[in-house]
Amino acid sequence: MLSDEFLNQIFQNNQEKIDRKISYEYHKRLKLIKEQKNEERENIKQGIIAELYYKEGFKDGIDFIIKHMKKL
Image (cartoon, rainbow, N blue to C red; front, side):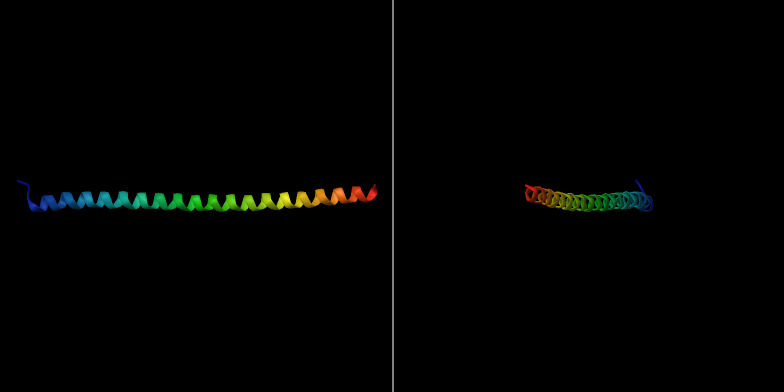
């Protein structure tokens, strides 16, 4: 039979490995979440910029039409 000390040693060694794996996986997923949030922020920012360019282009187009209508 295996002694209690030996079994405890095996358990502690395995527990340390499990703890390291859990810690590694936790930090890996945490980093992934941060990257996704940064990507999401960037997408929102790009959407706002695109909308502002669209609105500005629309205003410029309206101004162009009004100027040319006045010339007629």
